[in-house]
Structure formats: C-alpha cells, structure tokens
Length: 230
Image 1 (cartoon, rainbow, N blue to C red):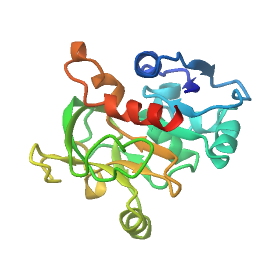
Image 2 (cartoon, rainbow, N blue to C red; image 1 turned 120 degrees about the vertical axis):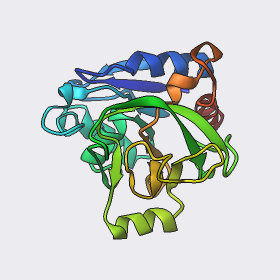
Image 3 (tube, rainbow, N blue to C red; image 1 turned 90 degrees about the vertical axis):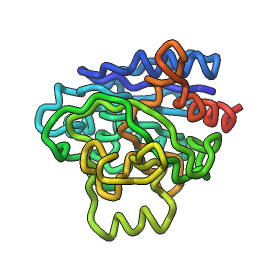
C-alpha cells in the first residue's frame, strides 16, 4: 500500500499515523510538506493528520486548506485516491470542500482530551469494513473545535446515504447527549464522502493502535485499508 502523510506547520500527529501505517501495512509512508505542489503518482492513501495547523489561527484548518499541496490532493481525490483526515485533518477536509459541514467550537468551550466510545454505524467502506455494524470501540479525542455542524439538508443526506461512519455513544452503544464530548449534531464523530473514498473523523485511531498505548481499537481501520489495496 502506497501512502503519504501531509505535514503542515503545527501538525503533531504526523509521526503517530506514520508509525501506525508502517506497523500495520509494512510500508513506510512518504512525508509530504504542505508547500509541495505535487504528490507521488500511484498513491492508495493520503493521510491528513491531527494537530494545530498554522496554530489554528483564523479558523481551524482554514489556512491549511489553502496550502499549495491542497490542489493536488483535490485532484487525487477526484481520481479516486483514498483520503483519511483525522482531527485537524477532518477540519482541513471540510474547509477545502472535500467533506460537507464544519467543525466548530466545542459546546462547553473547553479543550477535551480523553477516551470516548464510538459506535460504528457504517461498515460498507474501505475504512470500516473490518468493524462490525453497531460495534462499540474506544478511541481518544483531543480537540477544542470538534463540534460537527451542518444544515438540515446536509444532515439528511448524510443519514439517508449511510455516510455517518462513527457516532459518539455510551458503552452500550447509545448515542446519548452525555456521551457526546463536544456537542456534535446527531453525535457525529466521522463522515464519508459520497464515493466513500474520503473519511474525516475527530477521534484518533492511530493513538489506540498498540497495546502499549492502552488498546488496539484503531487497528482494524488500517487493516481494512491494507486489505483494500493489497
């Protein structure tokens, strides 16, 4: 599997996802600086990692969405290359138009950093196929602007097309308000594009991909990608 990790000034999870991709796939991803203008050919996956691109000035992900490399990311996305945006990467994908909606300030106006439970709502994708429908997994979050917002038309389209990949839930799989760490509408934690080739999610699967880190609930996502491109 041939992959790259995009690095912005302020990225802080680029090495984490690179280590996970290397461990699970056996192939080290290429690190691509945001000021580059062209990605390698023959890519299977583009990873847009978490962090605080440009220090979250202006609006989270807004400045990164205008970096030189974004034009080729959009070109590759149109050609069907798979893209995974995590946390700040999710914010970047919404800001540049590859995913709908926006990530706004957390409901309680505080940074939240802890493990949460997610319910897997969509397994028919190259990112989630190794999970079971309705499975509850534990994944860390670390964000200040993770509150997913979209208008009713967009929300209805996401629901109707089965493009909500993950929801915040309690340990019984119920998407309750108490289990929602940031106020996201409909407890949305991750969404897919119409072709299911782009996934954006606020929780960090790469941070729970080794038992030495406290668990491995994030591993099936990367195993699914490996299966898809092997």
